[in-house]
Image 1 (spheres, helix red, strand yellow):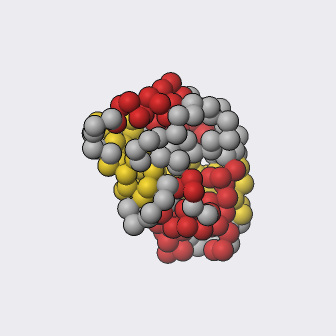
Image 2 (cartoon, rainbow, N blue to C red; image 1 turned 120 degrees about the vertical axis):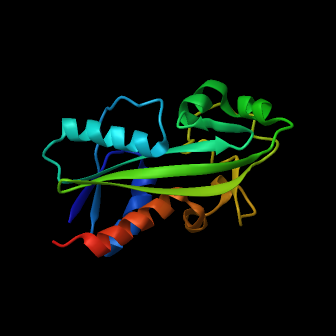
Length: 192
């Protein structure tokens, strides 16, 4: 059975396929140019993005949209849902300056909004960890799929996400946690 994921990010699609294909779902990327909301919780923004997808593709019966953010303990709610935009503006050097002499605890939070044959559901997850000191002084976005991965050591890990092999990285992934929750709901509630 097909389910559309409103992203063309191959890393996100790979992660979704690893969780959903074993339970019988073919995950297809869906390119949608939606307006990126800039306020609200991760869950609210995922739902707003889902609404935009459904306006463009009302024919779809199974579609999901994700949103995520990273939250620094030193600055509550920041960068949060604006993480990508903040990184694009200040890069690694700016993050290093921002967190100099501050608490480097952080957490990734993510949500998937799912539309399933008229029903809307939201699934959430998080991964706690720490932003390393001596952040790479590389402000280029080239080959940086997830720009905070070279900075973030998850709780229970001993290296940044970017240095982990794919299986180890997925074991810490907030998105994987969200997808696992969604897959569990699908197993319990979806009858074809």
